[in-house]
Image 1 (cartoon, rainbow, N blue to C red):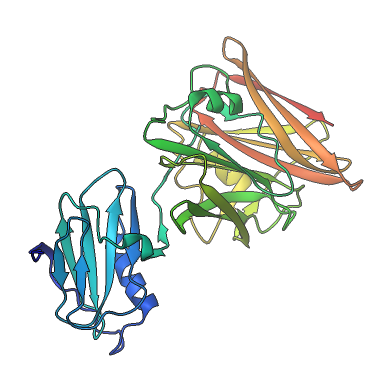
Image 2 (image 1 turned 90 degrees about the vertical axis):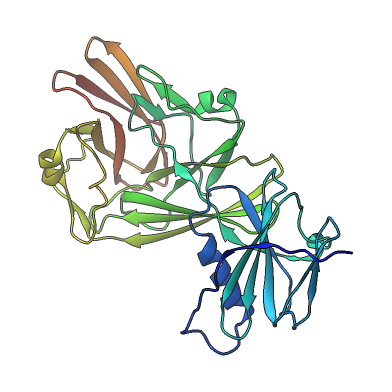
Length: 357
């Protein structure tokens, strides 16, 4: 058996504020910090216990790596590649050593190593650059997650007034569409934040944080999250965790007729008449040179939520937006829904049609 001489790609990184002996959690955090920004799909494995000086890592090709000090040992495996890397965290002070390998599947006993949960990169899949909206995505009291790996499935959940929706390379990516109802508060939703974690080889956690207006009564508002991540197989198990916080955003000058009301927001001046955010810039990312915000509201004789929405082109510069609201509990309530689409010129007319059932 020959010893493996590997290229050191990064020098030791000193974490001077850490204690004399690094715990497993601290070592995990050091490794996760190092991997921030890593875009290639990967998994991280670790030996359960701190390894003493002289411990030898044996690769799948029969080569060895002898460690010269006590440390925590990690291996980063990249999907579909035989190139990986070891991350060695010195137990005494948290120094990090990064070692690349080529044509190697990792340690020979890798199946026995501990899987380290990591945050998974993703990109949002907005429809705001199109004349398309999410449709046929009726929520329930518990969140519904739809794993989409083909256009055949995606077609079921989008309608377009004209044009088409953004492309997705389903050979490399999966679209995770999650729909739910805000049952924790009757306040309308400002925004939805997401984070995705891989907990094991096939288990994932999707965190959804609902950001709520500080005023305005509303029905149980529907929310939608659409993100694109690396390709997931049908056996993947994804748990959805929902939390909510109240922001300092406020609504102004909103009416609630039973037939529904539509406010077309084409610029920041229009926005400021109806929405004010003090603590942050939830709406600052709306480029009104490219997008239009449709703010709809109404009144129902029962607690209601949006179960479906359809955008149709009915003529030259004319569109219909149809909202279908489902009700339960005989309690009158107001409702608010926001839809962002591609820029509408001032000549365009939109008619709002609201259906209760």
